[in-house]
Length: 245
Image (tube, rainbow, N blue to C red; front, top):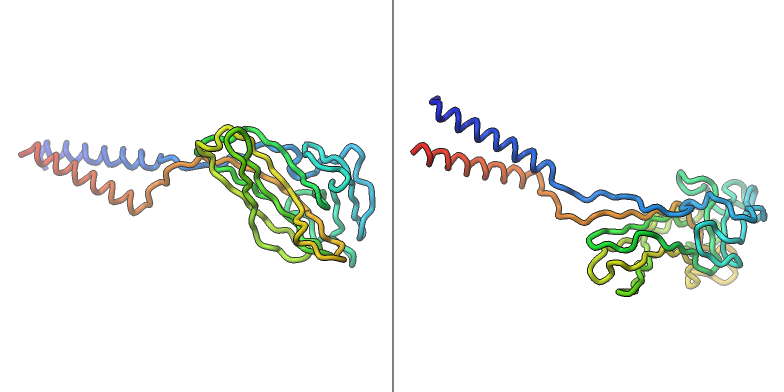
C-alpha cells in the first residue's frame, strides 16, 4: 500500500466513524411529566374521609378535592372496599395508594400549566374503575380552550370488567391553531351509561398523569443508516480515486 493510499484509507475511516457518531445523536422525542396537583387523590379533604359506604373498610367524603375543582354535593374522594361480599372494587388502583376520586354526576377538573406549545404532544392517562355493583360510567378528556380554539379530546380505553381498573388515554399535538391555549383535565360520569335501579353508576378515577413530548422527525431505521454510510463511503472513495488520477 502506498503512502497516498494509506492516507486516503485513514481519511475514509475517520469520516465514517464521525458520521456514525453524528447519526447516533439524531434527536428523538422524550416525554416529560407536567406537574399536577394531587394526581392520585391521596391528599385528604379538609373535612376528612369519614363517612362509611358499602362493604368493609369503605369510606368516602363528598367534599372539595384538594387541587381539583369539583361540586362537593355530588363528588369527592373514596376509599373503596376491596374485600368481602360487598366490595366495590377488587383492588385499589395499581401502585397508587387506597384513595381515589368519584363523581355521581358533576365534573372533576384541573387547569394545568404550561399552556399549549406548538409541536408538542400532550398525553393524558388515567385509571378508571368499573364498580362490581354497576357499569363503567367514568369518562375522561382533555379540554383545550382559549383565544384560538375550543376542543375536547376524549380518553379511550378498554372496559376492564367489573371490579377492575382500566387505563384510558387522550392525546393531542399543539399546533398554530391552539398554541397558547389552556389545557384542562376533566373527569366525568357518563349518564348515558347508567341503568335504572343500578346503584353503582359512578365515575371512579385514580392515577392521573399528563406528559409533554416534543414532536420530532423520526430517526432513520438501522437499514437506512447503513445505506447512508455505504453511500458516503462510496462517494469518499470515488473522490479519493479521482484525486489520485
